[in-house]
Length: 121
Image (cartoon, rainbow, N blue to C red; front, side, top):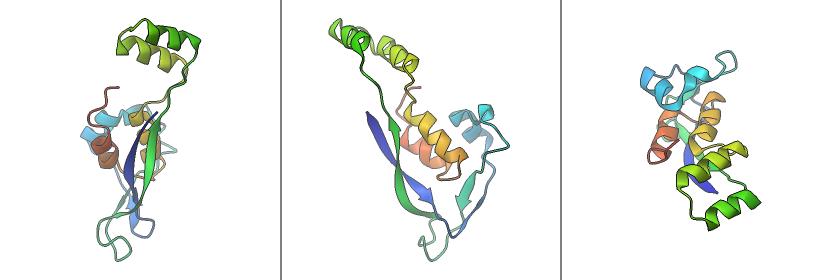
């Protein structure tokens, strides 16, 4: 399991927002359904101390260890092989979980990019 904290968009001053081209590329938002996306960003208010954010939430990456994965670990295979098997078992990366929360309007692309900058998809 891996986890990171990201700031949540302030509910009081959050407003619709159109991500930049860089954010769309970084989070691969072009594959997300545009009709249901509700990107939001806070303007800043007294509730959030003019930051646009209020509170935090986690983004998570959880990998199931089955017998095959256990065997691969024992055989000391590369991280790439382990990651491929984990993806086959349904693992969602930190960035993918963060992207889902961006599309839902809970946090911003900047927050997810900042929190996952060292992660390899």
